[in-house]
Image 1: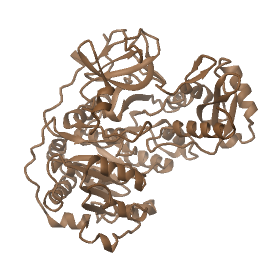
Image 2: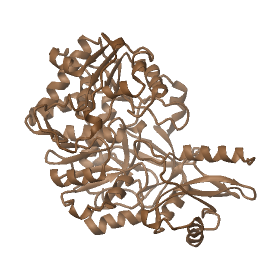
Image 3: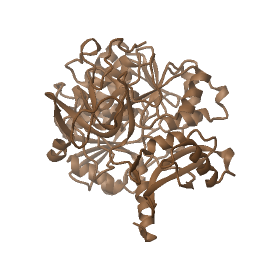
Image 4: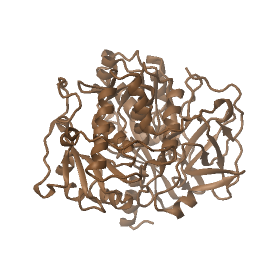
Length: 571
């Protein structure tokens, strides 16, 4: 078990250097799979709905796909290759195959529609796409070969192309994985089948990737402007792939529930890269299903689960919770949103598990901060992780702020990206120099306490100004979770003729509290928080829109509210 350093300074600048530092190898990410396969060739690398894939099979398939990419698709070192599919074993094969071919993985959210996909293809200048066959049934098929410079598509069918074809799938195999889609006639010669690529038996050229070569280019969420490609090298990805394993005590005997989207950096690292480096077994749940998650944890003895608070809340609400065996779980954590205190306390009291929150971004290839397992703090980002420095600055003056004051969190470490693809101005604006060290400006507001733990306040631009008083929405949301009728909540600003702006709560009620009125929530809030802070308006909704990583899409809700106000003659 990892222990927090006993001598970390109670200051606003924290360093993971010195005894806390780790030294990453000067090798490629592909080499992690190479070494693990040599160590544990017959060990199960992936479980997926009854199919078991050994490290030997995973390695062999990745080599074959890498060979096809080079020989048939003409992929060369540094080329960007779009990876566009749901979580499945083929995603992991394709990811490592692209790396083995010397190319750069550009993971794309499979929920993206045609216009969104076109941006990724055009911006990255990718010539090759590896996708699942369902892309041809979502209206995006034609765009696979007409977007940007794309010339070739390698297409897999989820269930039909699963690696261990002789295994018996579980009855719970979802229909979307078994559906059959065919490439249209017009795509003949440009779209190749996964099974044919494997059967071709091509052998890739010698692997000459180095630590500072580009490896992965995830795109930002696009909350401000078009999504931007984040340039990551083998070195920056490797640092967190290894650091995550050390921090969470993940090893060859561990079993990891992989349920976060693999196209996103959190799922990519915790659900794929870290377990492959460690030789752990990945239990894959392609889409969140609380009943399936409970069964898989019980059946496979899952030890590590990185999810998000929404998933934990959902699992704890299952009517079958008492039937699930969760005793093998040793590490449960995540990020993206703060875990409500009441839920964290229940998890601890009922199962003896601390939900270990962490913090990171696409630009940092997941974690820059983590809570130590023996000294966690609730609703806290944690301490800067290995080799990482962080501090809080005034976002205007760029001066370092003292303990307890709210400012912008900035970070510096080996996991920080090299810049935004093709956007030198945005890259320049994303970094600052402080005492001879380069820091990335996260755009997130927070504080640091006397023990060196960081706390999220909000996004830099997510603040409600009520008669000059600053209201941080996440604080109000956390307070609302204490109301017995509230299942989910999002705080936004709304027009107020007197105060200019006031607080509005969008609330999802628990199924047992459907008789609750908005006035009851407002009255309770009035008694629970400061007068300027409590919601003056409450609107009940069936659900809150969330991104694929579980974050509430508050910007979408805020823009909708502004549009409503404008339509009603308010400004």
